[in-house]
Amino acid sequence: MIDVVQNSEEWHQLKCGWIGASRIGDLMATIKNGSPAASRRNYFNELLAQRLTGRRSSRYIGSLDRRLEMEPEARIAYEFYSGNDVQEVGFIPHPRVARSGASPDGLIAHDGGLEIKCPDVGNHLAMIETGIIDSNYLYQCQWGIACSDRAWWDFVSYHPDLPEELKFWTKRIERDDHCIGRIEVAVIEFDAEIEARIASLRNHG
Image 1 (tube, rainbow, N blue to C red):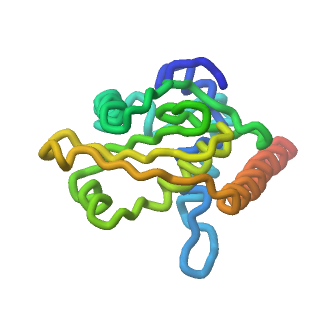
Image 2: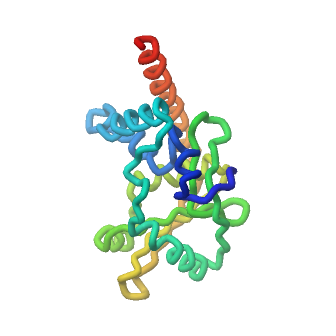
Image 3: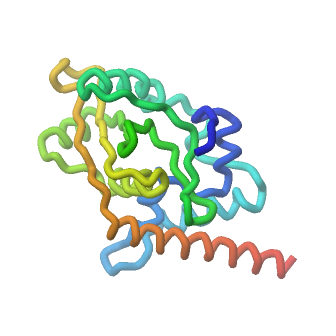
């Protein structure tokens, strides 16, 4: 675990070129025939550029979006409703997979973690009604579990503008070693593809 403030300049530089939990869904995405989706190619090119330039040019940098603004409030709500204390952390490298890690929204006790999302009203209410969490979020949570070697993750959806009884929704996600194994293989292959492309480019230089 690396002690650094999330969303700080130091944090962004630390993560430069690394595969992060929030983008595992892009890495794993496929189209109907099983081929990689465009989001995988886009993420590949983004990380390739970061590793070659040493600069983290991401859509997230410099944006104080609603999720970041509401996250502290959502964390307090989680602690209130769950009774759990949340330990804020910076960055956790994966213990076995190079150049990959996670920045969870918190760790809980010795075996849990936390992921907070502040989606739009429609998506928030849909999760409450169906109990279904987007696969991208599930991949992110499983990678957080893998990086921190935990047993479960609490997923939180929060929308402060709704009535009190509808603002907060949470669901526990248990560790899925089969899913984690699939992600680990995919991340290792993805990282190797990037490194091979870098080597090829330098050979042509």
